Length: 153
Image 1 (cartoon, one colour):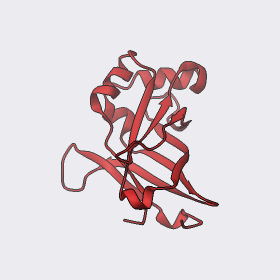
Image 2 (spheres, rainbow, N blue to C red):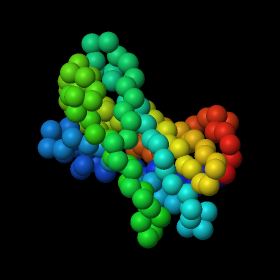
Image 3 (tube, helix red, strand yellow):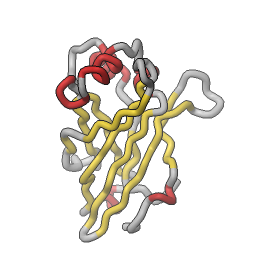
Image 4 (cartoon, rainbow, N blue to C red):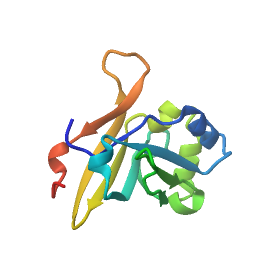
């Protein structure tokens, strides 16, 4: 694991099910501060969620930019909200997303890229939501391509 200040938490399965049923139009991801002292003075300034639309007529990846990024709360948690509506992803992609039967179909192999800024420096990290090695049916966030991160904090 690199020196990332924040680590994404697993998706809230009930919230994703509510999204897939059309009850809500957003997917939220919580970032937890690894260490309060290293998090202090930093902020998440940008985030993108990449979804693989395998149920689409033309399977492809879709990037959804964060709609809202909260400030860190007292525990160091940051909530990132991704609004996924017909208006912001297009009708065809919106239909493909809504045809996913469960969270695993929608979110398996999804990637989260976020930028953390502090003073005049920023750094980007990417995590993939993928199967846990040796545990059937369980997924977790795994950091990928740490060499692509630049401008170390």
